[in-house]
Image 1: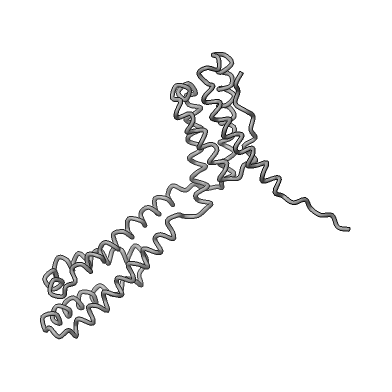
Image 2: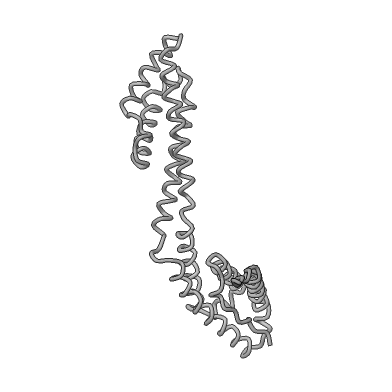
Length: 241
């Protein structure tokens, strides 16, 4: 009679633990009849795995932090470059270009150096200023051949805003507590599910459960091997002589 093997999941490292349960969840997803038979118990399992994944991500740190730092650096670089560009064109040989550059310089001065502001304030200032440039100074931008540059400034700012929003959503989704607190919720639910699956295989016959059991046992054996290898790599402590 096929049965899901016994496995003490508490020996797994955090990332291994979450990945193991994620794989088991996927296996049940391919067997909707069995999944449905488990009812609210499986719903609780899925929810607990997601909470653990969120806690693990919080422990590992924000994946968006580096991205938004780089994006802010990029838009700041474009801002600095554009300010130098406008200043240089105020000395242009063409009087029309000089006049346009002077008008654009006034609007830049009016909004100030946004790079010194906090993220949200910088984003707002640049959005308003770029809109003003494209709306009220479109002719000047054309004369200066700067329309594309302002488009790039706008794109860089909008891209930063989008990613900053992603990080804000990620922060809001984080839970209090640590990964250990979430792991101890997942394991008992998993054990209840396996107990029920093994019992159903006995009562109803293994035919409808054999494939699912084999697939779960594959991952159990895989992670058992991982744990055994890790233990084998530990060097024995040498006794002092």
